[in-house]
Length: 273
Length: 256
Ligand SMILES: Nc1ncnc2c1ncn2[C@@H]1O[C@H](COP(=O)(O)OP(=O)(O)OP(=O)(O)O)[C@@H](O)[C@H]1O
Ligand SMILES: [Mg+2]
Image (cartoon, rainbow over all chains, first blue to last red; front, top):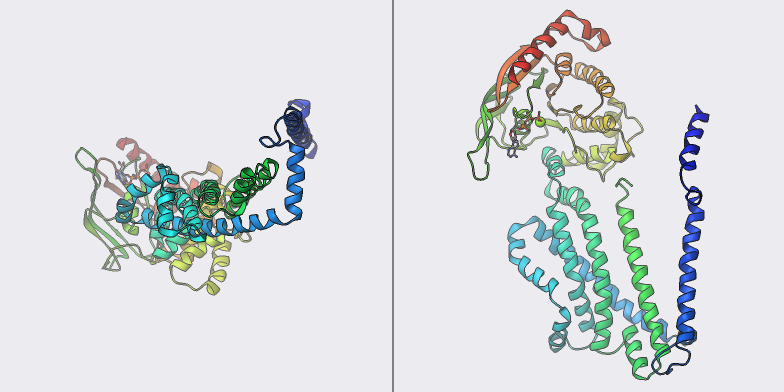
């Protein structure tokens, strides 16, 4: 018995090309390929820009040195703290508002009918256009930044939550009804878990838009944080130093996306892989 | 007084841009306490609709349902429903799915575990409480559905083609278990099936329904003595079984 199982497993892999027979080796090769491309890209950049005007173009080695300097003197660290504290607060508030409003709209037709046009219109419009007017109302400080982040991030959460809540399979609602689950139980144990993947993809979109909002807010309102560093060093023609916060923003955005994915997976254990 | 009585039950579904569709037309049925009723009939004859109305998942257009003489107005913990498909919440484990029904009945969490263990053991799933539905076979999922209905200790169990999606072997195993289970517990049971064998095996009376509009065509008593569970495979060789199976088969053939 064991032998025949072994044999069939072997014959399966024998049918595939050599490289695919060891998925680990395959993956290492792919990583190496990506790393090689990156090194090549950086080298080309380095040599092509070597003789360019240093005020306008920075080369990778200068950027690395500038990043190291900004790390050592703490500038990058404090700018990141500044940006992230604003961002995280804004994002959390946007998520909560988005989920609550989305739930209300998804479960109550009247609420949906009233809010739907505004939410769709605001989601579709370039919200940057509102920022100057917003600054009249909330100033240019912390509050302005939070408001802008919330404004950018909240709509995809609302829209995705509504979709998830409204899509709940009738079969699952019937289970709640048949066993006389309370309204709270139905929300918590049927609608919320069903809508979770929708909410999570809304959060992922919100994350991207929220980061953009954070940078835009730091450019346009009081200049501060990572966006502030970018503006200030660009204005001072210290182009290499301006690249350092750009790197940090890119890394943060990716790290946060992975984090949201991990949270989603944690709550989605029940799904068939 | 019958345990359950269905009086002149009619259900019409609205059809957009046309005359409404009559799923059930003047259905009358009395079910005694402890009786096992099987419903058979061609697809679309209203079996699911009838069960859903009795459970309170759907409202009748006219007519009435009474349990112990009291009119039924909605779902109740006196009835336990087993769904044909999608009957479990996929994000809850087997034990949590059962806990869901217990919580809905108002049983505090600290008293749910014991019941959950007991009903899982009853359906032969001891030790499977931690599994998510997708980690269980189709037959095991249906057992969890049955366990959940048992957990709330209903007076009437309603099962809508609980074994419909299973392979023949699993199906027969579950039929035999169902037989043993129901004969031990003596609950009142309404059981929808497409299978004449299943109906004859399990039921005290088989209700034959006809479609368009859904009506009761015939009620066939099955006089195979109980307990039948102990007969095992021999049950299917008894003259009464063979005769009733034949009779029902011909009746259904006339309908399609
Ligand atoms: N929600 C609904 N809206 C409109 N028509 C419906 C609805 N539910 C059922 N029907 C119709 O009512 C009739 C009876 O349906 P029902 O599901 O009760 O049949 P059934 O006997 O259970 O069939 P099957 O054996 O295929 O499960 C069918 O013609 C069906 O199309
Ligand atoms: Mg049906």
